[in-house]
Image 1 (cartoon, rainbow, N blue to C red):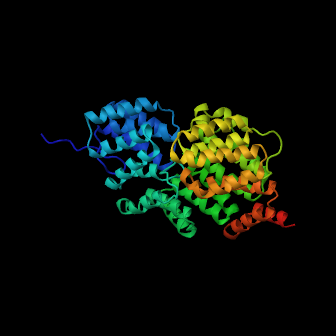
Image 2: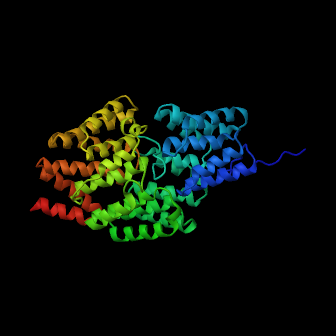
Length: 434
């Protein structure tokens, strides 16, 4: 008898499961690639329909470990490893190995496995999403920030100019400072797939880095009201809009956005730490927050393990920011101890960052400024975007002004204004020059 043709995944690879489970799996991956809600539910359905489906279990373990999804990661990974021994091909075994190493081994080992997988299977869109430090995943970790770029460029042919790869390429081009090209790529991807969260995310960065604050805020609001209504990480898009409002010194809009879109209860878990907590600290540094400071609500919404034992340097960075905003010196010291025992990036970047933030809290401004300045070249290693890591430079500027180092602060502001318009930076420079 003829063998039935195996169903395919989103990227065109055969799946060792039946059609119904494959359909649910494709829906889950599609939602991950578009940054839309419902991925965990669809992936759970895939393994409920076929408990022996290795990739369904592996994808659940992946998003539980790296995206904070409500998943029993240990159980999902154990099910994936059992299933892949019983029924799988080389592609499926490779993907499960990637997830296993990212969950159980060091970040370097997990990254190496992911790179090997993408060398062998460059058309795997989900694996590529994991490799790129954008809105959904923290990406490959390297100190100069170029590994993810090389991966995206190397996999271009395998994706044939599709909207997903174009979205990621747009994000990487804006990270390089190639904003015109990034904007063109993002618009091309959105024309092909208007719901592409990655493309809209890249465009949000382009508007911010160009200083197009009014246009950027308007475009974000329009997308969120229509194509982005079913998206996950809506808080992150709101955070982007709030960055425009801080640059425009529209403090009433910042407070309104916080209350309506970014306050705990509307944002939960790691997302509250990354978006809500960092926005509060930026607002305080900018002098845009008066009255009671609700950082305690953000800390209460984050799991204790995320604050004290973050799995990645990216989450650790935002834990340190939130603890600093809360004035929690003891919490910063516990985080520093954890970082010194964690991976190399946490040891070399997060631990000294905690020390500099401790200097901030104890008003040792000159020491804090020296520590933060030394760290800036190493920050790309924590992952995330330049706009997210910029909060360290904002803290440095605050420390420089507080230390009385006005010339150094002026130099930094002038350099930023040379590449990006900002009414807030312009007003600060004027104040420092008077």
